[in-house]
Amino acid sequence: MSIPLLPTTVVGSYPQPGWLVDHEMMMAITPPRVRMAKVWRFEGDRLKEAQDDATRLAVHDMEEAGLDIVTDGEIRRESYFNLFATALSGIDLDRPGEMPDRTGAMVPVPRVVGPIKRLRPVQLDDYRFLRSITGRKVKMTVPGPFTMSQL
Image (cartoon, rainbow, N blue to C red):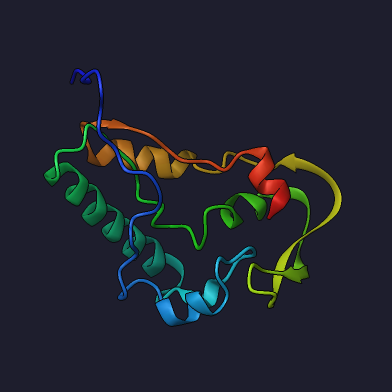
């Protein structure tokens, strides 16, 4: 598939369906900076299956809209950066720190306790799944070092 001179794509996350996440709970601490397993309406294998289904629906919407480049919609993420922050060594996942958010409310944040290193590919499985469900060009969004250090 060739790409036009000015290709179309999405910027940002695709809305996660209410049957997948508890939006009210997620909005109580927004954006989540540490893992928040309690926002998901499923657990274990059923969660993965539900996330796959929601990703398929998001990709289908993007294809139906005629986008040239599709994403996975970031459906599996609780926020743009916590998926990445919690995949690093040197982060204490069991005892997060706290800092004020934009409104001044104290929120849990990843706490650095040692050297930061990537433990594993963070989005490889998500990319492989996306590639398996579309023939369009794809992209995966990742936060940069500045965003990660600020949040």
